Image 1 (cartoon, rainbow, N blue to C red):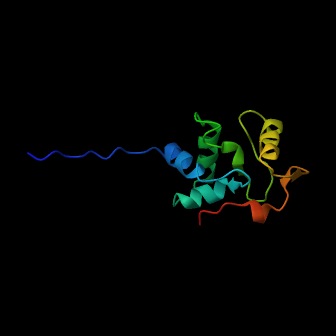
Image 2 (image 1 turned 180 degrees about the vertical axis):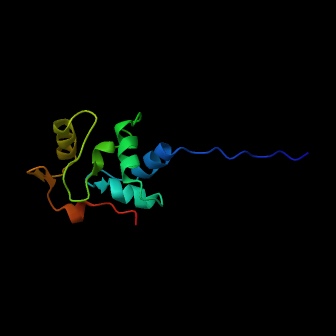
Length: 108
């Protein structure tokens, strides 16, 4: 009998983390962009996955911001998120990414 290969089902969160690894330092993406990259509109589910990210900082959930360029939430607090983004060369003024369009990593 030939060997059969079982496909391992990957959870939604794991798929989010895999995609997020493609966002380089100095760039950000959005919950919406990640969802679109996964072929869904489950933006809130992406946010939940980011909040529970067990792989940080290798999976850089601090690089996920709101679609309007504002910082959004972070499990370790928004000040920590801002500090991490600034350390990667991202400028933030009044809670928003400066030059948001130029910094945005899109998956659409």
